[in-house]
Structure formats: C-alpha cells, structure tokens
Image 1 (tube, one colour):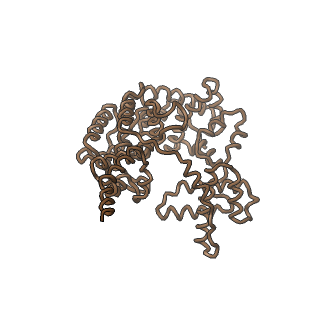
Image 2 (cartoon, rainbow, N blue to C red):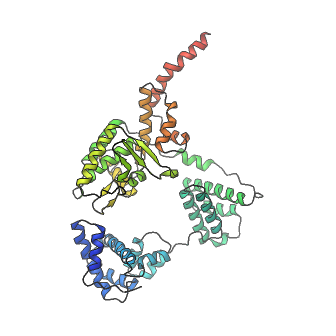
Image 3 (cartoon, rainbow, N blue to C red):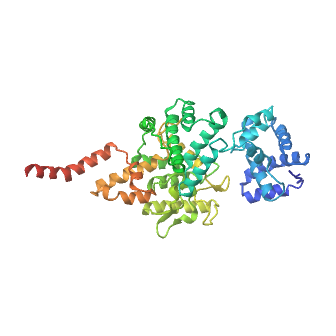
Length: 451
C-alpha cells in the first residue's frame, strides 16, 4: 500500500474528465471523492483501515443502501489510482481475492458492519478446484475449452461440486459414485437431481478417457426428463403484440435519459426482427451497422460464430432514425463504440441491463405481472421470430422445411436441430400445417386409395 494525498483534487478531476460523466453526476461524484481524499490525507496509506475510517464518517450521513450505491464510484476511482500508479494496489480487490469472491459490494458491506473481521470471515469461499478432484476437474474444463467449447454451465456445476467436496473432506477417499450420491442428497429439488446426473455423466466420461479400464456408468435419465417436462413453455408474441410493445417502448418513462425510449424501441425491434440474443444486442458496435448494404454484423457470439444479417428496408429506416438521435445525444461516433449507448455512464448497456429494461417494457405492456418471474422472457422474442417467420412461409405457399437451413444460419445455430427447439406449435401454426396437408398431402392419399 502507498499514501495518496491530493489536496488540489487534480487526480479526482482527471478521473472525472476521463470517465466522461454528465455535469450533475460529476457534482455528486466530486463531493464523494473529496470526502474520500480527506480521509486518505489523514492516513499513511490507502488500506483497509483507511476505508473503514471513511465509511465510519459516511455512515451517519447516508442510509446503508444509499452508501453501498455511492461506493461504486470509489471502486472505479481506486482502479483508476492503480492504473495510474498512484497507489500500489486496490485494497478492496485484495480483500475480494483473499476470500475468493467476485463482487466488491459484499466487501464494502462487511467493512461498514459493526464487526468487520467477523463479516469478512463469513465471506470466505473455498479456492476454485481445491478439492481432492480439483486438478482432475480443472484439466477437464481446460481440455473441453481447448476443443472450442465455451463450457460455462458445466464449469459452474463442477465448481459447485468442488466446493461441496472441500467442505466435506471425509468423502475424499471414497469412490466417485459415493461422492455424487452424497452431493445429490444435499438438495431434494428435481433441478439439483438432474444437475447431479449430468455432472456424473461428465465425470465418468472424463475418467474413462483417462483410464479405459474403468467402464462408464449408466445414469437414470428420469430426473432430467422430469425437469424438461416442467420447463417453461415459450410465450409466442403475435405481430400485434410486438407493435404494442414497440409503442410502449417509445413512451418509456426516462426523464434523465431522453435517448433511452428510442434505444429500447430499437433493441426490441432487433431482438424480434433479427432474432438477436440479449448479449448480442449489448455487444453490437456502431461499426456493425452497414446502412449501404442494409446489414448488421453480429460478432463472436454463441459457439464463437460471426454472422452478417440482412434486414428489411423498414427496419433499416428505424435504425437510421435511432443513429441520428444517438448522434444528437452526444454519443461517441467511433466504430468500436457501443451501438446502444447510455449517457449516464457514457458507455454501452450491459446484457443484464438490456434484459431488465425490455422486461420492464413487457410489464408496462401487460404481458408480465408487475413483479416476479412469471410470464414471457426476453428470449421469447427470439422464439416468436421463428414461429411467425414459419407462419409467413406457410401463408405465402412456401414449404418451411426447405427454408429451415437458411433460418438456422440466420439464427446463428450450429445445425438445424438447434433451430427445431424454437418451433413452438401454436394453434395458428397447427392450422396452417393442416391446411398445407389438406392441399398437398390429402389428394395423394386419395389417388393411392383409388388405384
């Protein structure tokens, strides 16, 4: 640790200017960082003791939720000090690393508590892959990722199993099947039982690859089937539903961010018309829009694919309108800047924020209850795009089966089987399929009967 004394607030001003905050935000953040500098001036180093002293001064001024929101700017400022070599390290990042946690806010909450030592000790998490099977599981994850798989969900399952083994060292000498049995008994839910089955299949296959003399064990597929049976059915929005949602997005309440309603409108438009995932929306750059050719480029998405998607003329008109409004709002015009830009943090929207805002539009439009997880999801816009596209093909007299491979490529899927998952059989789709069979298939059956 090193000391930081900045009586002229030159470092603070440099941080605020480089972050490109709005004027009102700068006034608020300047006040917070001025109090932080006052506390730092009275301490020999920017360390845990200094942070606790500053929090102790701020706690009487703000309620705890407000205080925990305000420290977010201090988090960013500490990283700024480290990048500019003003201090040697970020004390919050060090405390987080020591306890193997990913978020900074639990550290701040512990430091502002009445007993920081006890609160910090309660945050401690086992080191990743530190169990008796840790090296084996880490090597397996590395192998699968080297083969081109993202392997994120499977890695989370393995890490949870690893933490269980670290907290139960008495199972270290037993066989893998015994460990899995005890792990499955920790929760009675069907989802956990299905996860344990998948985990067991992964580990036994990995073990068989290393030692072919150990035969892979057959697992009961029933838990996974029960979970799949209870999986929430996608909500298919009709074109009228989409138009209503777009109207609601245009009037989205956002007094401090005038660009946000039009941003939401364009997000929903692309999520439905181009079938984009929420992460793909968030990662779009300004340079990914080609107004001349009427295409957008979706880069390095699921399965490490990049695809160029043609859009209809009407969608391109809406995109031009959004780009003009974005430019007038003062958004950066560099090709690598985020397409969906927010003026509060002067940066692109994160995927979770994209999901939250579109979900709020669904609530305002009456498709979801005011709270809770019941009702349509953002990903259902992608499902709706597939179903409505197939309906349009049926009504235009086109055989959808001959077009599915094009749709699969447009959606960014590895093969047609992934696209078939999105085909939800609605009453309209069933009616159109029946009409096609009546017009094409029924006469063939009659001719065979006559012959």
